[in-house]
Image (cartoon, rainbow, N blue to C red; front, side, top):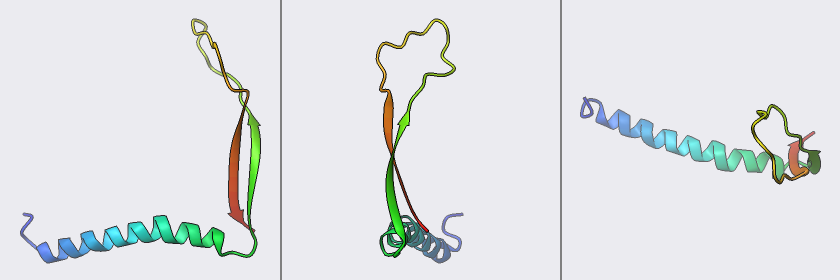
Length: 73
């Protein structure tokens, strides 16, 4: 089964690896970094404990977390 159309399967594997690298590395970073109207903002978000069962006890917890948003406009 693997030996049937082996050349096409190898070509498909190489093409899929190339596309994966292109989409994940090149396109995502270049769109944000090269765009004139790109922005980055850090938000401080408060944290709350929700949906905890009555038999659990929270001993220590961070009160806030920093979230970075990036995009273009």
